[in-house]
Length: 158
Length: 158
Length: 158
View 1 (spheres, rainbow over the protein chains, first blue to last red):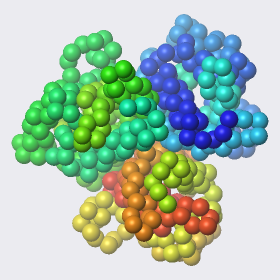
View 2 (tube, rainbow over the protein chains, first blue to last red):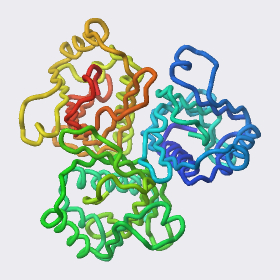
View 3 (spheres, each protein chain N blue to C red):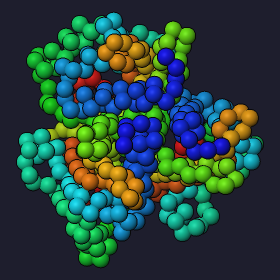
């Protein structure tokens, strides 16, 4: 695997699929964008920069992700809201073991019923992407957000 | 026509031209980004998801678009405002009839004179793009927005 | 130099590096993204459209940029804040003298400690990019912002 045009387009497609999956509310498809042993983590920049382990969400492996999705759709009591992701063009590099390291800024806007849209979560994705039989997947996805005050609570993946 | 690098870049250029045209306020050039029989529609996500026909704006064919532009510049009484589009990388697919189906998130920020910028319209473009003698054009452009409360009114295209 | 896929990717990488440099707070590396005689300017759209010279920031040459960075880190008294850039795909063209002219919308979000994120600066970059021995660099970077009211003051580059 080389960091050529095809790979760059495939990575762009992965991010577009990621955003569409969450923004469409198809949460049950969300774990399929990860490898089986992937690590998904949402962590405040303040903690991340100091190498502190505390995260808002930390899911290791697809079963934990599926459990979270089950929680979202079946057990967590919350007012529904729309999310909308804007993702910048990622900075890409590739390590010797054929892992794509992607770093990209994101903004998630939230709209609650009958209210204005607001800025929900702002930060950067620090991701590791690998090629699998099912196409590119995230092996690691860290969402490092700037706004350490989370409006209400964080229910859906960002 | 194949969904290769050249086509992807041409689509990216089309979106950049689209944003620049509106954000620069060159509204009279805006209909030129569409085919003669194109359908431009701005519709709330709530209605779109339920397949309801009600739209904030629905323009079928270039003459209706030109009429709208005439309205903007000559007949609608409104306080002027700036728009600024941020458009994510689109997810693209191609159907057998050589139509490019593009789906991409967008955020439109608005600035009124002597006021802070605010989030004006957030949503996704669901577009069909075709190749014409004058280059790529939109044959269909649906702007499906999340924030069903529109701040003031919607004068310019989004 | 031709406006081909390689150049487009290199430009995308330059913008990703630019955003990462500022958003990570690595300001001392920021002047290295410019040529020695580059012109960096932050100007309100209202002034820019009228061809008025007044700018919020206007730095000609790398020494002025380095001086600004020294000011940021050592002399300007200010409350620290995070910045986060979302940059749209640029519209590119190339002039006969091998200068890439790039025009792209940007949104900068700001987060102050223990506060919500807000829209800090919205506008477009009007840039000239040249190839140097050290890779692509900005020869000119104009940040033309829509929101003529700047929240608090503008300390860091946008």
